[in-house]
Length: 335
Image (cartoon, rainbow, N blue to C red; front, top):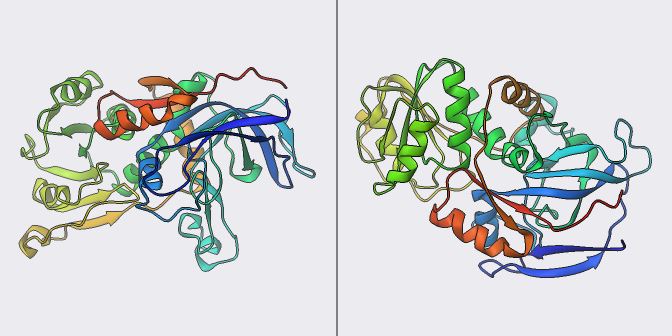
């Protein structure tokens, strides 16, 4: 095969369109990956809508599971046909102060999969081998895809929450459905907050071990030690601050959020704090996949063909599915 197919974003706000182009060759230190599944993340919506800086035209998608089809010169440690995962963080410079201090997620000169370079809404993708992950065997290709961002970013948010025994998850989508299970496995009490009319989502949250589920305007049954916000809604921040106890943390886990409205200083006082999550480190990946493998985690997905990417995006935008949306190219493995 000498061509690949993809769904491409040509400009902010434009529907994705299907393209075919010559199959690329991997340069050092790249892998050419035959895409088996690619998750549809809310960050993809921000890329497609122009809410974060992207390099148009660009193929979205940064929750890639695939199989190595070609290996760039000088790349070691990979074999043809090997399964790998490709996350949001696609490159870091290694030279800036953040990289040198172990904070590569804050790199001054990063590249991001499906945003500043082409991603996985495609039959094939190029990826820097240094930023690819091996994946636990017990997850299928479709199940593994949401782990690459919904799981990883959620895991980083959970780590920033510290050892908080009681946590609240605001926005019960792909990330929260993964994190709720991991937090319960860790022995934490989890409360889920959904849209006011989302009874289905509340039932789904309880089925995954959440002690309580209600809408975001409701106070939880007990004060939270930490609140993790996955919905891109700034108005949730003051609500979460009111829900956390003294010394509690509110962790904003999205890459984009609407403006946070003003709130009384009294709601922040008593050493409450607001944090944001930025990207991930490769160490996050190593620790998360180990935990995901041990925890008994199950992944709920809705599968869409690649050429139905716009429908998958709409489903994520509307919150009309439980768990995660995943695109699957109709493409036989040619390796």
